[in-house]
Length: 333
Image 1: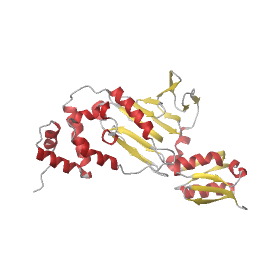
Image 2: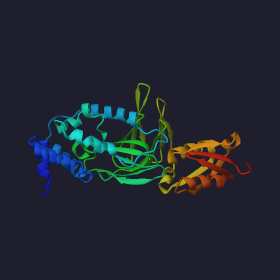
Image 3: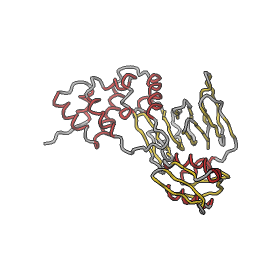
Image 4: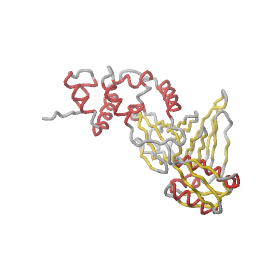
């Protein structure tokens, strides 16, 4: 008869009272991917019921920011949907002397998949996710959002973004802040609001739709804080003063949710950056005249081919695709 792995059975292991046979059964049980979510729920509950020490949260955050900078996907890098590292690390972790040691900074590195949930999108994909507090984030293509598995224990609503996303933040009864961090040390703090964040190529842009947002960034050795109002857009680059624009139409910043693109006298050279961000494509040009041609218009593109065809239709060009390289040329070329 197959043994039942219950909540009490798991709690016995967490408390260090499990027998060697019980440990073997749990080890085998947790290898089954269908049991992973239950295992983490039991872990979270057990930690909440049996606090054993004060976690050094600031130190952990500093270490994780460093980890983000080291592991953030480069532009054009394919983002896998699966996370096999998570399963590989479970066996080693489950044999550790104390489960609670996972939360200290010494165990931070190499355990990201255990402590954090990563929401991802692939090239050309736009996808909404509901976060543990009921907030909703919509990720643009080639984006990644990392969230702690232990929100309900720490009460710390903090996420890390690489790419582009719209946030609809749910206000809590306790008035807990919601913080978005990026790998270039920009921090966006809100209570409940709607805003978008673009974070690519060491540049961050934040547009506020409604509510109130506080943005913090570093210029040299000075920490700067800016209060945003609806319609404000702030652009931040490393060690440079922020550029603030007011009166922006927030709807324009989320056209990507409908896979809609709008261009106003935009050069093909600038559009090549969008191709790389959204579809992992690299643009090449037959000559300098093609590179400098501008495009004005609006269209919806469900995929990379539709995007390229629309660009060429608006400007009387043709393209040739070889792997991930797209060469634009004139029709009479």
